[in-house]
Length: 304
Image (cartoon, rainbow, N blue to C red; front, side, top):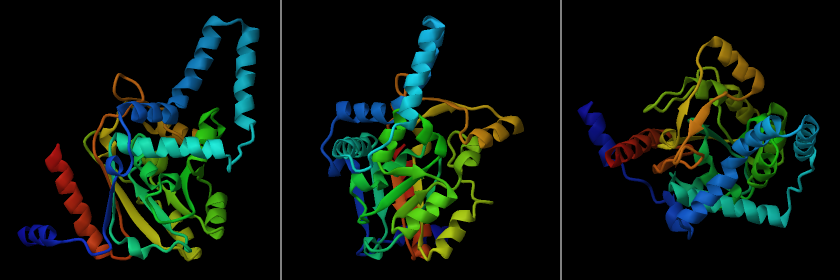
């Protein structure tokens, strides 16, 4: 064990290693960062409070009008190439990245070719895989021109949120969509642990559920796309939460495709607690990956 620990300390990144610190890459401040977080996650609560307020305080006819108005936003077409939408999404991506800050460690950036599609297996899911934002196409840190983050399908049936997340580069995490994106040359970021991982997560512990999650590996092999392991340290400290337990709630979560969880941050709302989120990306050099992840983990724990 002592020799193994010494080997890890002796590891030094190669010439292709890159570190992108959101706070150094983009000019921002606490006001812009907080606003970006609010616009990104806030629609979750906004829809809930709109429905609750309408049900409790408005006549039934007005309540139905509110529900009808929200349903319009569910089916309203999204212009994926909207200049205003992409400008808005770029604003969110860059200011959210500076908020924590999120730090992206790429073991060898020269391994990534802009004309090839990759499958990024991102762990852990935690309450929300918020560190994925640092890899988004509009954030601009990765050298890949076509990049999509796959998200659970209910997001794309949620008023307001479906437009925002689509402009930010999210796409439904369905098998058919996964194949289509890879075939079109898009690199995809997928969180394989999904619902089960969120259901099993614990405080002060990074939980990764991969035992029966081999489908994304099979698809990557079928499509001839390199599989890239990604791990985010510190993400699990961004929120405090309460979730139900038991097999009934697990089956319910699988049916509705999200875990019915209560989560909160600063001021009891969606503003994340500020912890450095270190995201390690590696391709091909899996022997080095073991040492690099441990090195980042040691640095993170020593900063707490």
